[in-house]
Amino acid sequence: MAASVHPGPNDRRIISISPLLKQLTGPLPDNRRASLIAEIAGAFRLVLNDQLSVGQCSSFLTSLRCTGLDRDARVLAECGKQMKEAAVAVDRKSLRDLVALKQTRKDGNYRGGFCDLVGTGGDGHSTFNVSTTASILASSLLLVSKHGNRASSSTSGSADLLQAIRPKPPAIEAITAETLSSIYEKSSYAFLFAPMFHLGMKHVSSIRKDLGFPTIFNRLGPLVNPIDGSIEARIVGVAETELGSVFAEALKINGARKALVVCGDEQLDEISCAGKTTCWRLVERPNPAFRGPKEEDEEDTTSDEEGEPRTLVDVQQFSLDPSDLGLKRHELSEVLPGKKPEENAATLMRLLRNELSSNDPVLDFVLLNAAALFVISGICDSDTSNMGHGDDGNVIRETGPGGLRWKEGVRRARWAVESGQALGSLEAYIEASNAATSQ
Image (cartoon, rainbow, N blue to C red):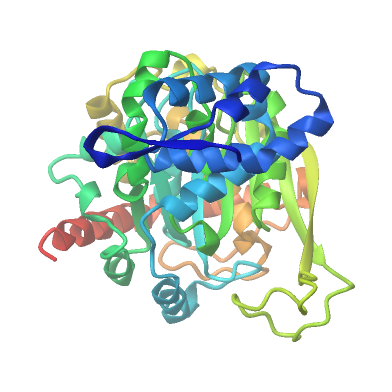
């Protein structure tokens, strides 16, 4: 990327990206778009390093928006890589060791790895905090690494919800790269508060506010979990149907092998309780060209110097309805639109204490999304079930869209609530996070 350098405030080295900006403001044929991706990713890294002037940073983000490049899978994937590389590094070896210690969580086609459930936000519906609540339910059987932030377009973001829990909220800012392993030693759940890991975002926060429209940063959240390379399975919600295939491709480019991208027909970044949801599933299959060892090792997924991967990933598209999971439809107006964090936190605790009716709209909404993470993780592929107290062991083998056991996912999600296991998981996380404040 052709650029010039000049000193900035506090001896900060400011780099000019004028040549790139000129190209972004002119006609951009498809073949030229592809050749610009590396330059765009390089400029994005300068944003994170606070090496662009305010004017050029604003122009760069605006240009990505106006050209539609912030909706290009390759741009999202490459900028996501830059953001993860710029994040505070987490010791992946210690995380692998933790997964090995929690071998009992392996079941079906779930290998015991970390899982995430996250949406882009910005759908304008301000529904109940479904993904955060569903991720807590999922942690009853899975290792969950929930990446999130405070609200930007809604009234209650994931961080806002967690900090509104009473009588004792989790200490979300105590979970850092240094304390993360200790959290998982005591809990199967951790909330990774974005500002604690993506420090470069502070350099652009005021610019994003001044611009007044969503930028590429609003799309990158689901792609930049701080332990992304250790995530085994994930659900990603997008607020526009047109972005579904884009995010599926971006995840595929960045090496995800087990994921489900979803968009409710109401342009909802969750699996909808009100009607149909379009789904894009990343499906892993063996690569016949792989010549490596038969047993998979996390650090050995290519066969030789040519880099033939052990598996290939296809994208399968299908539609999902609450009835496919044995649940009723509920209008979005029934799932507490626009509630404040304190009210949503009270509902969360009532749900986890099993105080909601069995067909409560909020409960069904949460069950839908928690079930999906169970299904995509592979745990529902098991033909046996020994979850613990309250589990009758009757696996539901019926399959639905995509050939997956959606009703078994709901059975497991409902057990997480009724057994008290999800509540116990949250309480363990709260205690572990507060204990980390003294480290």
